[in-house]
Length: 240
Image: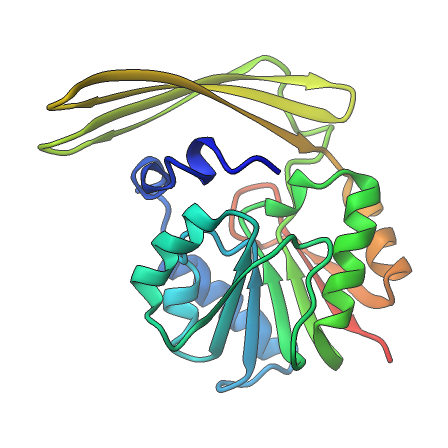
């Protein structure tokens, strides 16, 4: 995967454009669900596709956390937040290996949508290898195909004394692929920059995700009360 755009060379823009997201509150919800699934405080929790570490920071209070992401630019930002004691691995969620098992794996903010069905099977196989037997997996799905609005426009903005940012796109649904060509305007004292950044997300149904969890040897259910409206969370327990 090319390391460019918002996830690569411009990773510093990520936190600015998502400044509105309450990661601390969402992390508390994840903590509640992990506790309910039998993962106590002090357990080892890995976040796959951890990005700039916005969940790792609050999750590090009750748990011993680690993270992985395919983009080094995102991990560089995360490292400045979590310090040197937290393990951060630059790896693909579809094929990573850990030196020792964890108690739980979480994959949040719909990052799983970046993998196609064949990639989903590989990711879930990697997620199955990562935790101990009986360990827990929490995945936040991307938007289901029946819930995604074709040609829906979106815009986010960020403003500070030294930077103004606008990001706009129209989501196009091509079969099961949600295609988003984000147009960015970044204004600083050095001038105004315009660039585009394409993201493609695979739209799985909830039933398809649950079936994939079952095939990957997880006992799973859908928790409707998730983090983002309408997406829910799939929570699995590793068999064997």
